Length: 129
Image (cartoon, rainbow, N blue to C red; front, side):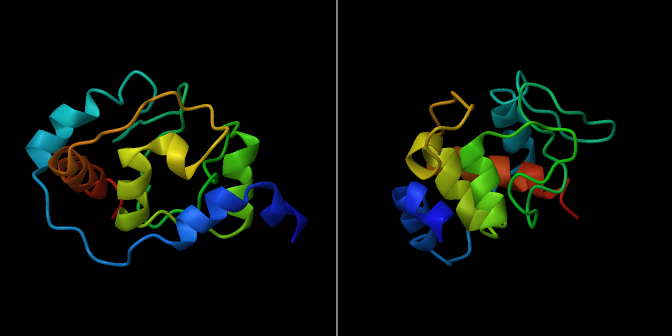
């Protein structure tokens, strides 16, 4: 309960996420969008943690659960409170990361273009099977 009081806006934002399914994106375009993420994240065979955690199995994965990665306190709390990354939650996070998770180490401003996010999620989804 005390943990919930520390980040109430973050928890309310997550609770308000839509449960509607995202339209399918384009994997090839998503790979191009992922270039914006590559400096900090890795995905695919032999992926490893970098400045950010590797993103294999991100869809359906509990937040802050990649072994060997040092998460911010805000992300640790999300994981402890049971956040699992669905496509919808990732979409909201990718749109404006700091609006959803404050006090995170990630400095990326987000992807405002909905189609870019859908394409990126389609690309990541192939590593989440």
